[in-house]
Length: 260
Length: 156
Image (cartoon, rainbow over all chains, first blue to last red; front, side, top):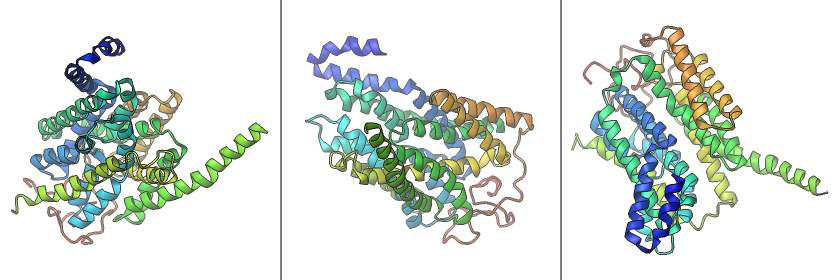
């Protein structure tokens, strides 16, 4: 991979070829570990959709148009729970707040001076956990003018391939033995657990990680209708305050002692 | 119109609700500083939300895992996470260990088919919602929600 990047770098003179090259390089990201896990997760998702009574056409439509896997899980959970449109909208909206900082932290790395805003708005649709993890790990290796093309190649391919996977595997998964179906279902949460912890670059993320993991099931028993919102806003705020006034203060104090 | 309703529903509650934040993210891109307190707070809320959803997938799974014992799922996820930490945070190790443990556990207890859905905790209050997306079976009082296996009449 790295030799390829180096070999093609001198070709910057021909802009269209370079962009096409980087678009294709982004497409090759389909064979990275996070992409492969995501694809398996989407096989699991199609099984989840089937068991929730969501028809194939709706599951396929949802895969491409929503794209974020947790948002789809919440949407299906609320839909089958009989929630109203307003309640679903609120729950998905609040669960997708994380999209904003995710996109906001990638955009400054991705754009160059001439990048039109409409293109960034369009491409932002393809940002979800996996694409964000992949982009934050790889995009800095790409020359800046080609980064938009690189991300477009990766993000659009990943979304289209997974939409196809949901279309093809819907129904096929119910034929899997329960052992395989169970393991596939389990892949999504264990992948999120490991990858979100691994990409946490600030202590507040790890504190919120612990709060969410403990609070989620706990509040599901206490207040099942709005558990996710309570844990997110309440738990997230507590985690933030704890990080700001306990963890970071201690770290500052320790740094101060070190200096003295 | 009746047939299009689910798509309108998904477009409004799914697409608009997620892309709205993505668009705001683009617009905020340069304005929201990555080291600002507001950014940390938003990030904390977001992480707690995602992890709450994730933990619920382990603790209250639907479908094939619904009948598996809780300790097995918690053990597989927990030991997998421990292996992930010990291996220097390799995602593949964490995921691999969790899946192998779960598969071995399911195999050991001979769980090749889901047990009948009985005696589960009612998570969604029955009748507490305004409109049922698809009718749940009234003869199964312990359906966690309409998504639970066995809550649908055949062919629906």
